[in-house]
Structures are given as structure tokens and as C-alpha cells.
Length: 322
Image (cartoon, rainbow, N blue to C red; front, top):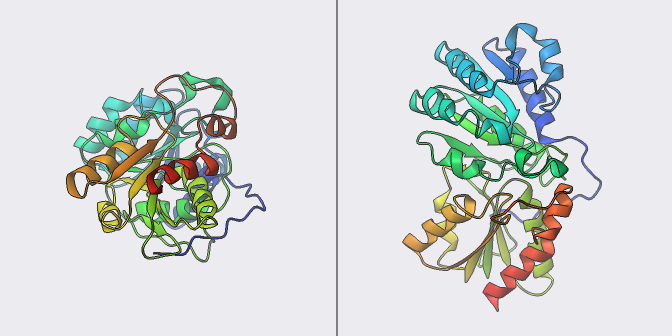
């Protein structure tokens, strides 16, 4: 278990999607098999620098998400290392069959990058929100699902994916997110949650993924000031879920709170609940977006409306502890 990090309030201006581009550019310079594919989304994906620097390792398919995934899978079957970029709302729905058959069933080394995930398209509304993608992608056998929490963890994840030969879906948001870790001190082990806390015997555990990790840490700090100790599991690896980390804490804590930028069904909360119920029953409170079209607004406005912030998370932990 690592100590709860001090949350930097200086303001990061680099979104996770740019961290992906920077990492792939460094890899592509030494490895011609690294290929980037976009569906008329170079700007949205922050991949314009890659396309400019490596035109022979770039593929633009236009607004054709199904073709995007199939072409990427075909390149993977030829020994290439394709990374296919498209808005998460379209990548996880329009090309679902291609992800299922061409990537997962065919066991190709294809990495699907869902950009502008969750509600980060803001006022564009439900058509552009991706609140079902964790459940959809995780339901596909052989498909891994990752939601990194900041740019430093994103870099470590992409570096790891460049080294393996399995398919994966990675969801990142549109806007910069505040740093949680430091570049020189970013704990990372593939498919293992980062467990954060200031005691070995916490009262409760908060399990979060993606952009929800930072408010989860903020909640733990608020609770610590009240004498309540909460561990935070940065569950960037939603599938495969790090069940060992959950079940190590289950006998100790009074319960769990899960937090995700996703619909309330089939996502992180459902997976954690199934794991806890089957092995070491404890109360689990799932915090998520509602089962309805969410309000329009910035990510912060949406999160605040539905209590997906430090204060809202802390309130649910208090329900478990008290």
C-alpha cells in the first residue's frame, strides 16, 4: 500500500490523449511496426503530431469506425502494432461486432483507444457520451479494459501495451486531468490496482477508475481529518479486475464504495459487487451516472450534480462506517 499522494493543485494542461501520442511517437521512432489509425479524429485524439512525423505509419479511414477496427486487426495479423483512435461513444458501439470478432475472437494484437470518454463531450449530450462502454467491452471474452487515472499512469500503460500481444480497449477523457502521481514516482504493475492509504487497517475502501480516482483520493483526505481511514484502489485495470487487491481488503474493511464515470449497470461497481458477494460479503455502495440521459454541462458540472466529487464520495463512505 502506498501513502495517499499530495494532490497538486497547480493545474496540468496535458490530457491523457496527448500522453498517448507522445509515448507512441517515442516508440514509433525506433519501431516501424507501431501504427496509428484514426477515424477522422486526429485532432480530437491529439494524434496530428504522430501523423505528421510518421506518415508511413499512419492510416486515416475517415468516419468509418467499423473499417477502422477491422483494418487495425488486419494490420495486427500481419505483425504490426496498431493503435486505433476514435471517440469512445462511437468506437464502443458502431464497431462492436468488429471489436468482438476481428480483435477479441481472432486474438489480434489490437489496441482500441476510446477518446473523449464518459461525459467529456459535455453539452453534446447522450449521443456523444460513452456511459456504457465499460460494460460493453468487458463483456467480450478476451478483451481487456483500462481506464488510466492521469497522464503518468497513461504513459506507463501504453508502454506496457506496446510490449504484449493481446487486444485491449483503453478509455481516456477529452480534457486535462490533474496529476495524481509524479513522472519519477508512478507506481505501475500491469493488471494490478494501485492501493493507496495511510494505514494498513482502513475502515472502508474506495474503488475508482479513470477520472474518478482523484476525487476518491480527495474524499479519503477529507475523511482522514475526521478520523476515518479509507483506502483508495486506483483500479485502472477494470478487466482483468484485480480481485486480489479487493479480497485482501475485504476482511478488514466495513465496506466498499465504487466510483465510476459510467452507467450504474455492468461496470466497475457491478464487478466489485460480484467479487465481494461471492468471496467475502461486505456492503458495497456503487456510485455512478444515473440510468438516464445526464444533464448537459462540463465534466465538473456533471460530476458535481451527481455527487461524483470528493464531498459526495466521503458522504457515502460515512454511511458505511457509521
